Image 1 (cartoon, rainbow, N blue to C red):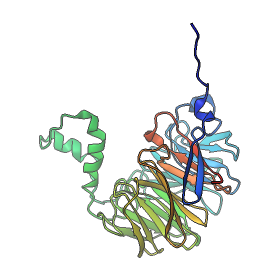
Image 2 (cartoon, helix red, strand yellow):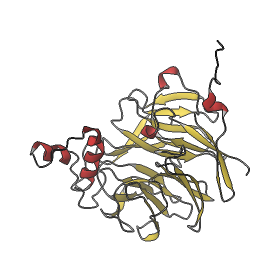
Image 3 (spheres, rainbow, N blue to C red):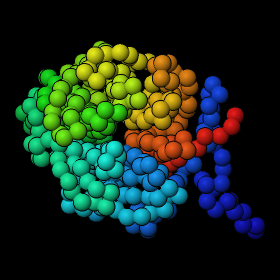
Image 4 (cartoon, rainbow, N blue to C red):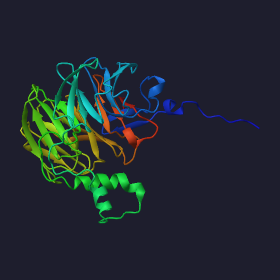
Length: 337
């Protein structure tokens, strides 16, 4: 009998190219050189600094912030003991890290070697948006709902909690994303227990809040991520409402998209294009005129992400989180059509 063997490491050997309208990227399904203990670690968000080092929030309590160098080699982890439920982060003009902790209702600022500098928000204290995270459990115990399909417990509980949000509350109730604008102001999406975007001065002074629950322009179900472009416009991805909103720095709505998206979860820009990662399997690319120039992938395609960022080479890093059970960090590399 002949023993027939396949290719070892076939995921790395085969090529997958995604292209549309003159833009093309090769998907690298497994990126990064990690120590063994990171083999099954999930990453929820990331950012690159000026040297193209990659920083990621990791769903491992022992390694909440992980750093890779520009070649993808593991450098260090940091932040142990500082976080409860990590979500996303960004690099500031001062070369520090702003890290969103959904569970602690806070944005923590760290140096790139892990020293804690300050917090935005009240640590461990959620603002009053009306959000009741455990409403599903309460109603079940009161006998008002008696579901039998336990497999949908998590999703059902999440959706029912969203319905309890009554107002755009002050910072924070389970925040999701953070970005620093070109003027130095800090913007935060507050989306898992609130329906708001907040603006802070660089010194941490709270300046404004806008949003509120709803599915029309300027209102949110789950503002999951945001990016402030070079024109100081605030792009917000509402994952559950399947929409992207564009505001000026004061919250005036400038643009809105709510079709042909697969759950926008992360946004990044290189100054030329705005890249919108979609958890459902796509990447939407817009130009600075707020026009869509390309949409890569298809529903439930491998191009999926919970978090996404890019580097100076135009490479994009995708962090699928729980949408994959195999690939935890992927890269999209620009290629010629």
